[in-house]
Image (cartoon, rainbow, N blue to C red; front, side):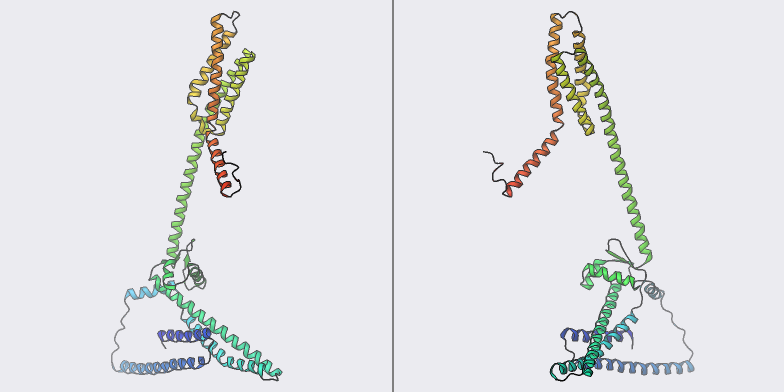
Length: 403
């Protein structure tokens, strides 16, 4: 019996058993299997007879004629067979085991199923039920169940090896294949195929089988898997290099921002120290209060820059003109205030500086307030969204509506 005949026999028995199991009809199961097996045995007999004749004819020709040189296979055919042997295991023994399991399971199921049904009928309707009847019921029931289990296992094993053959055929000699390609020939889900391939790799049906990390590709040679690992390593190296470069760039930008902010804060502290000295030197109630206010606002400005270094870029004129001019005015005021004679010119100049300090304080307060513009905008947006959500849920009942 050649490989094709074995495949046909297995498929026919699998179909018969599956049909009996699905329809729960075992009446014709033994007859069908018997016809199938007898047919296969007849074919085996014919093949043996034919093989004997061929051997006899070959011996006669070898005795009377010069033997012709054996024609070697083409190198390409040898290469294909060698490639197949290196990549895939033979599934013939598994097919034979599946056929044996299906046939034996069917025989057990039919032979003992009839006895089990009869024993069960006698137990239900036959009246007296002795120990022997109970033993017969249990034994035939066990063997019937064993036949069903064995036959079902054979069907599953046959289906398993058949899927393996379809997977190999789909590869078409390639070293790798996308799992989505297998879905077209199996009609199964990606999850089912992935589990199927993992089992086949574990069972060494794919001798050099590997799956990628994402479970999207099957590789059937160690060479393809090594190439995949090399490509994966190269990708990780590039990603790591890009991430390192990004981190270095961000750190560099942070250092630049912190460096600029540090310079601004150090210069601002020097101006604050000068304003504090002028306040201590003048020590008069009205202007001292204005300078205390100025010192507080300027300190808050630099505190905000310390928290948000990017704001240092917004203090160009403040550092280059406003603060130097303020310190210069305070120095002039301090010098005039120290004069023993306070003439009209000194008094008018001092009064003008005092009035200017109010304008400067207002300007510095506006600058500080502008640093919180983004925060105020975010808060206003959050409050608006919050009110809208409450109104949509019917929880406010017009509490936020304008009257």
